[in-house]
Amino acid sequence: TTVAATTTTQATTSTTVAETTTKATTETTTKKKKVTATKVRKKKKTDTVTCTVTVECKSILSHMNDLKEGHEEFVPDDGYIIKDYTYKAKKGYTAYDALKDACKKSDIKLTAKSTTYGTYVSGINNLDEFDCGSQSGWMYSVNGQFPNTSCGNLTVKDKDNIIFEYVCEYQ
Image (cartoon, rainbow, N blue to C red; front, top):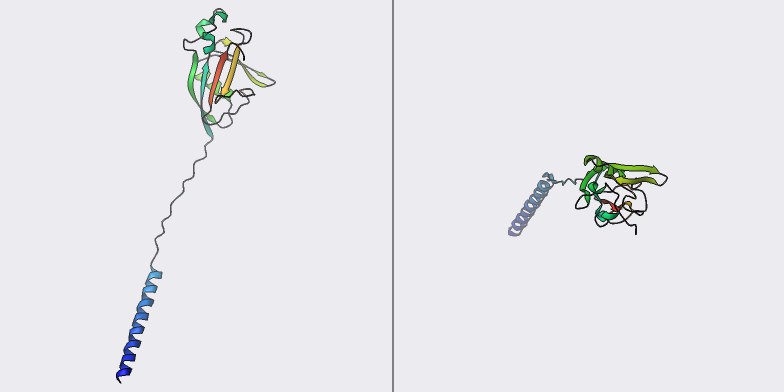
């Protein structure tokens, strides 16, 4: 009898443990899980670019004796006609568009013509090609490089630094 009682107690204890385990498992699976989602923000696609435009004629300062008479008044003391003008435009606009905008906003005369090769800038601020010698005229660079194409053909990219400079001697 003593042996039977011990077996019954063990059986009851086993059942209670099994029931407790089942209840714990059931409670765990029926609890709602909190899901934390992190939104990933996509960068907005922008259809605009921003660049800077500078127009300078510093080379004339050391060639004032070669400058056509009456043009001295168009040469600023520091050689800068427009300095670091910020240009914002839609993608696809050109270096020439940037120059036109800078000149218009600064009330600077711009002379250009369409050629077989593209837009040719012949004068800015009444300083025209050949006004300071037979090799003088306007050149432009983008990020320190002189493109092998017309400014009307070069599409502006974001953060471009465009410089139109009057040269007295082409090198």
